[in-house]
Image 1: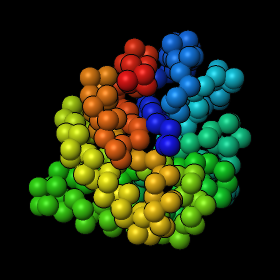
Image 2: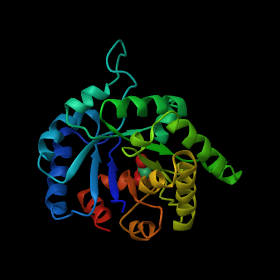
Image 3: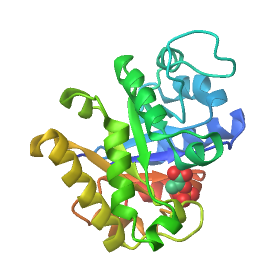
Image 4: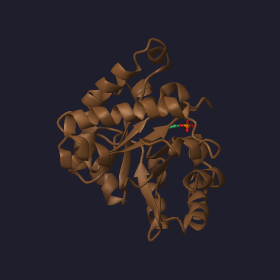
Length: 249
Ligand code: PEP
């Protein structure tokens, strides 16, 4: 049985007091929830305060990015060890905004995932096609290339600590969600590809989140699909009301 994982990607939003009050509200509303893994991924500036705030709660701390080295002359970057020191458990890696705005590719995302796993951070690895790729019917070849690239060289035991987030780029922040059928088609394809690479047992245990304009109104139907195991939520994770409704779909 795969436990659903709902993660909020706050992106570059929330000052410290706002972030703290958001998780205070979430802690209260979501206290009774046991059947979901709940993750919040605030900006780096909030990690220290939220780590304190979330101690003893059922909400797990995640980050939005890390650098593929332990220490060194990498001005402006953050080591996985520094995240771990703060109590970070998950880290989003290779979000489409990082691919598009900061030139991250499958090979860098693979390096980041490898070092994260080695140092004890669980990657939420993002993949997904652009609208142009979908319209040219390249979705499955793009997804296959991304899966092969981002997972290259990872062992079966490492796969147990990875979450894949399928985020069709055309659905992120646009209000345009993939239909349940469109999402399920790709999720089941991802699981099949992982099965080809690692075998059925590993593929069946892998959690694959959907991301792209997830809201309280569409989460329940997405979660009915066989291969959708949770959501990576952007905009709707910024309010306690909408995020908690998504968690408790
Ligand atoms: C995201 O940023 O990962 C995302 C899915 O954003 P939104 O929910 O706002 O589309």
